[in-house]
Figure 1 (cartoon, rainbow, N blue to C red):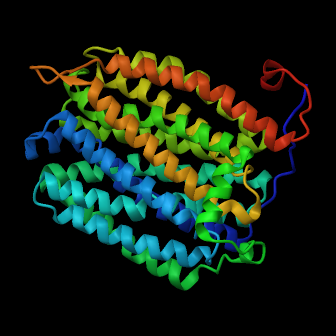
Figure 2 (tube, rainbow, N blue to C red):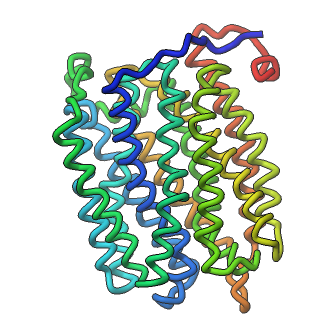
Length: 421
């Protein structure tokens, strides 16, 4: 039996702690801006008099524009100090979010989401490139676990507060709150974060478009891109209609949604650091495999429920989100080992672009499958669940090949089941 290389636990330095904290908070604002749209669906659809398909395009617009932006930014990602890149795109993200908060109708909201995606969609790739530059592989599981807390924290703190102010004021208010939170974060990064420019000494001077082509054409990188695409498709298919399904099919009241998101977010918040620590001990792929094996039954159960007590919905959803968190932590840390140092920025930007584009396709596809019935219930959401399960099974084998490529580049022979056990 072979195992992923392990190392004694290495403590973070004070600056590394600061870097993890500030990147986590930054990710919190980015993820909250993206995620708040989904639970607002139950409010936005009637408020703007739009269909589920139109709402699906509001979600997809961010993803598609983020994908295009990531493709264009990839050629330049390794040519500048990553701190400067971070501040440039974060500024654009704040402006775009402000536009969302001021949008008076569906078409301007769609345009604002497109603008926000151009800048916000690149942020995660820059953050991951910074993590890869600063932290060794045997520390990245813990780092990714903490960064994943941004996702969970947005559920525990952001979404309930966002939904509350949306109900008490209007659907514009959550976006204004995000802007007010993001501005001081930008100033902290500007004054306190050190430059991240060691990659500049490694860069081979080439045309930005040739850099993109070279990165895309590298067989080793293609495996990482393919896994990222399929990983994103499943998540984007389920999330946009989760709140609408909870209200229309499960019998959850709109005012109970904050409690549901808070409870499941707490579970995922705990799961992030725990999964990160364990992944550094047992291996990133094993963590991903365990999470996947829990996601499959939880997804099938969740998407086939009828009217269900709130407490049971909370338990099932908490299990599902905790397992998804474990998958993201394992896969994110593992994929950082794929690119060479001089290609990290380009690889991460392209990976983010493909993720956003495939996620947008997944969201739009779900919008075509899901139909709203006369009583407000969604039809065919179970079909989406079966598609997600199929994608999950395929990604297990795809991530295994990446695991072998990162840790055993010379192709040591072993069976998948032996590596898992």
